[in-house]
Image (cartoon, rainbow, N blue to C red; front, side, top):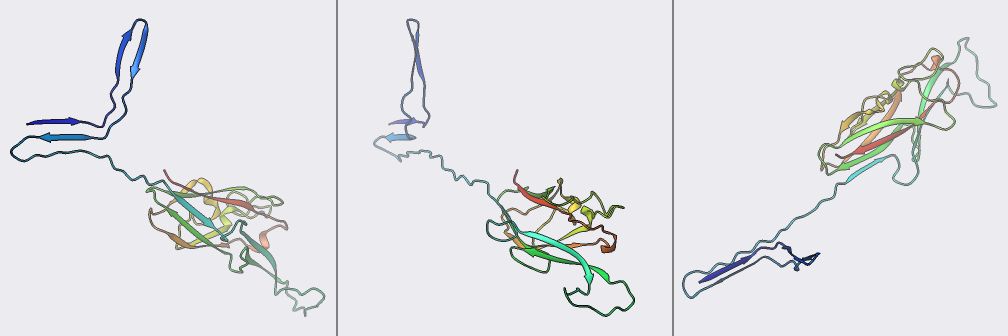
Length: 217
């Protein structure tokens, strides 16, 4: 009885021929095992390396499901609304101020945007950061300033069905994160609101570009 086994590993044969070094690389072969003989049980065993590679995948959508950036707008105006060209009776009291929220693409009056996130990697985190918005004065760090500039902490964010890094835009420093559960499709909304006092704000346009980032380690 004889038994021969040749593993699936390439070998290198090298020798010196004068001053030249020659390397011979034989072709790789499959794992092979041969058993021969007249009596008893014969067994041949081979090995096969088998693996499945799953690429890391993250998905994040905030706003409309197309290529257009969604916007959230807050407007401070007197209440009730004044209609151009019409007069209203004067009660002797100064009209009050109120904040109205709206979103664009899609248009909404609730200050809410659709959010979806998914990751197949444990330890995935979502963060946010603020950048300059063209034509707007940036939100102040913290709360409303004495000069009437609204602060990042005045813009509140409520997350439903998804996670958000912090409860307001003051957390959008890139350093605050929220964990995203792996292999769980999260779908819900971010609803933005304010807690500033409308009468404490100076006239002007204020805002930032908010960038959300999903990071898989």
